[in-house]
Image (cartoon, rainbow, N blue to C red):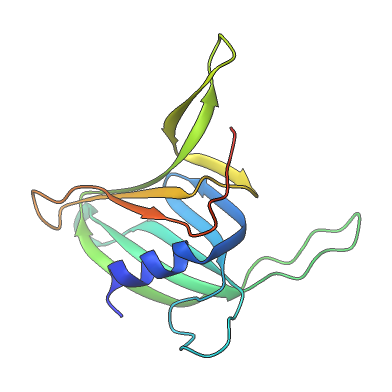
Length: 152
């Protein structure tokens, strides 16, 4: 499966927690890339824009089993990332954002692309912006099948 198709497939089947700071995106998915077409396997996916050679960036894809739920008063163990597959290299820019409903001063909400997210109920749309692969490459937008609504 090509990288664009794998991202679309993973994001479309996402469930649970979503985290992002703009340079990385983590989310739980039922069909992680590389798991095959067998029964659904809930796993955590991490996409990260990481430094590479010559002041360029690369888009790295990793998968982890879901971390165990921590007992009250303790910290859950960190995910054990596997894979580390480079999906794109030679990038000048790489960023993630989510389309959220942001409350305005007048109390109404308006859709805005936000880089920061940490928790459940993420918006169904995620945007990945890359530059350096081609001069004319637009940002890619991925939709979740869940139709989940977020309100940040």
